[in-house]
Amino acid sequence: MNTPGSDSFAINTTELTRKFGNLTAVDQIELSVPYGQIFGLLGANGAGKSTLIKMLTTLLMPTSGTAKVGGFDILGSPAEVRRCIGYVSQLVSADGALTGYENLRLSAKLYGIPDTEREDRIKNALEFMGLVDSARKLVRTYSGGMIRRLELAQAMLHRPAILFLDEPTIGLDPVARHIVWDRLLDLRRDYGMTVLITTHDMEEAEELCDSLAILHRGRISVVGQPSELRAGLGEGVSMDDVFAHYAGGSIQESGTFREVAQTRRTAQRLG
Ligand SMILES: Nc1ncnc2c1ncn2[C@@H]1O[C@H](COP(=O)(O)OP(=O)(O)OP(=O)(O)O)[C@@H](O)[C@H]1O
Image (cartoon, rainbow, N blue to C red; front, side, top):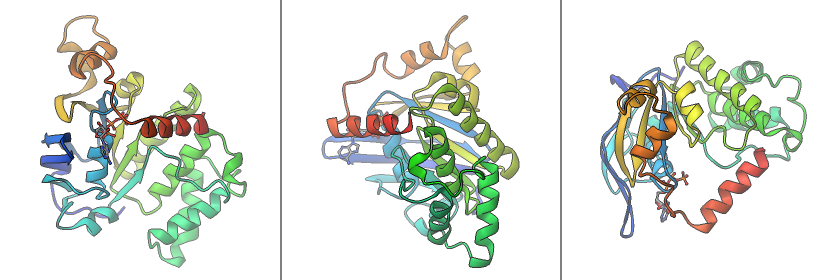
C-alpha cells in the first residue's frame, strides 16, 4: 500500500471552507476520520458533500482553512496527497469504447505503476473485483454493477491508503449494491484501506459505514456511529428519522439543472 505520512487520522480538516460567490458550500468544517474506517458523508442535495470531497482530493482549492489527508497537507503537499488516495467520482469514468483490461492498463500508466508490476496488479484487481471473465469485453457491454467494480479496480491499482467514493452505488440494483459493499469491506480487511463515501442511501449508511457525518448547508450537524445517532434521538428511531432531524428535515431545492441532469444520466447509465 502507498505509505501515508505520519498522522493519527486519515483525514483531518481545519476550518475547511469553500465559497462560490456569495454561497458558502462548505463552511469551516472540522472533521477527523481515523485510519481503517468506512466513513459516510450524508446530507441533502447541495449540502456540500461533493465540494468537500473535491477539496480533500485536491481537485478544488479551499477558500480558507485546510486539511491533512494521509498526513499530508492538501495545500502544501498536493502531489503526496494524490499519491496516497484513490477517487471515484459520481460520473461514469470508465471508457466504454475500451475493454476492462484496457481501462486498467490506462489507469496503471496514469498512476505511474512500473511496467514490471503492471500485469500483476491488473490481474490482482480483476480477480479482487470478480471481473476476470469480462476483462476482454468492451465496457459498454458491462452492467452498472460491473462498471462500478471496474472503477473501484482502477482506483485501487496503486494501493491507495484512502479511497474517496462519491455515491458509489447510485443507480445500482440491490444485488449489485451488496456486491460493491462486500468489495469495500474486503478492501478495508485486506489492505486496511480507509474509505470515505457520500450516500443518500440510509441502508448503505447504516450497514456499511462505521461512522457518519451529516452535513447541513455546508456545516456538520452531527458525527457518530449509526447506532449512536439513532439511540441519541430515542427509541425506535430509524436512519431516515436521523437524516430528517440532522439534514434539515427535507431535501433542499438547490443544485443546478445541469448537476441534476448529470446525476440522473449517471444513474440511468449504471441502472
Ligand atoms: N462549481 C460550482 N459553482 C457554483 N456553485 C457550486 C459549484 N459546485 C457546487 N456548487 C454549489 O455548492 C453547493 C454544494 O454543492 P455540492 O455539489 O457540494 O453538494 P452535494 O451535497 O454534493 O449535493 P448532491 O447530493 O446533490 O450531490 C450547492 O448549492 C451547489 O449548487
